[in-house]
Length: 170
Image (cartoon, rainbow, N blue to C red; front, side, top):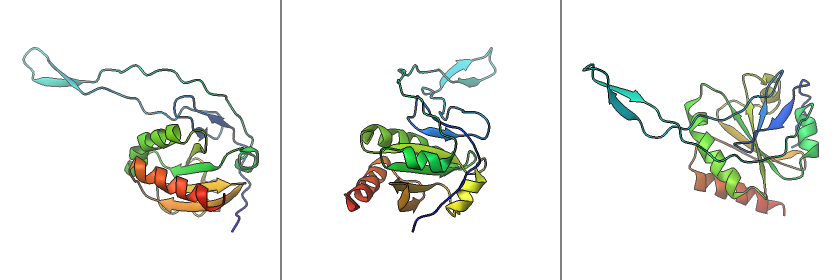
């Protein structure tokens, strides 16, 4: 069951930190959540404890920037199977999956490419693939959906699901 979508001419590019692609209507934006170390408590002149986050430095990851004019073009030109995470910024389970997707992307980096699509910014793509729950994941192979699943899950379960989907058609 192949679905065909014609997305608006929105640019696509890989995010250097998460090795994913962010789809934004007019410009590219980084899809990365700030990482903070555990909170430090400081006394403020007898007013009690105040939480102050401390930044943790992360190593820079080099990645090749890719730009596509539509989602269909991305599907056509992708040389690996593609895991698409349909998410929304207000969705708690979607936010939980950010670190899980980073771990899965790192472990399977030679076998699959991971992208994220904000369903509120790209409603035409979400409608085309009938996204009704968040997060929804679709694995594309040769430009066609080959597996679809919904909901948050731990990294080992996501990796098993991806590996199972990749083995099916090899």
